[in-house]
Amino acid sequence: MHPDRLLELARAVLETEKAAIEGLNHRLDDAFVQACKLMLECNGRVVVTGMGKSGHIGGKIAATLASTGTPAFFVHPGEASHGDLGMITRQDVVLALSNSGETPEILAILPIIKRLGVPLVAMTGRPQSTLAREAGVHLDVSVEKEACPLGLAPTASTTATLVMGDALAVALLETRGFTAEDFALSHPGGALGRRLLLHVRDVMHSGERLPVVRLGAPLRDALVEITQKGLGVTAVVDAKGCLAGVFTDGDLRRALDHEGIDLRSARVDDLFTRGGKTCHAGMLAAEALGLMDRHKINALIVVDAEGRPIGALNTHDLLRAGVA
Image (cartoon, rainbow, N blue to C red; front, top):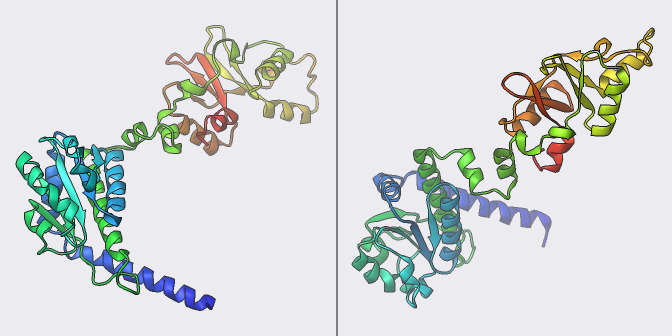
């Protein structure tokens, strides 16, 4: 087949599915609000169910709800009739997906759901279907046509259902005041979790690993600290132990380019950078990285409330921790 024809077919699918999504805008009404209200007031979990392709979409919707602050899980309707209905309690809300609204496996468990008094929200493509009529709230996800040229494979209809599920999840997320930190707590193994859960105290070098010299120390002492501790920087403290500044690899390079300085007799006071950028132990590691990026530096000294150095870290520490 000619490449142009393949691209033409792909664009036709995208246009069809785009139209399906745009069609949802015109059907959003009080039913959506009522569905959100039921889920917000739910003391249990949102139980999502669906058969076939709707089941696959249902699994994704349940996962999205669960990861954005709305406890949810998926129950296969076929298995529900053989014991899994015990997973549904009176405190739950059931979200049932069926494009036809006549899926036998779902209709078979409706009497039990009704007997339990569990609120039922349905997403179907047929507002006059059995499932739509029996549901307490019905969300219309009907589409004009499927993207499949045969009109058989669920394509645009599953896309519309998935998008409606995302709309529910995001509306609930915003209403609950769900934050990025909350999201990270349920994704501790992901990149976002590392960026939002990892603090400077978790990666900084402290104790014996903290490079530090006092004001007036010979330059060679600072070089030994930098070399032994391997951070490219050492803190310089005053008589009270408070940070006076930093001496870095960059300061050394600049000293080497400066005529008239005898490195053998020089003291750290002659060459160090007064003040210097610092952070605190409770700062997010991602914030510390941003601070380094903005000021084009490779290391930071961590200070306490009194300005005393308690740790140090560099970009390599953050890279190893997976923050960068």
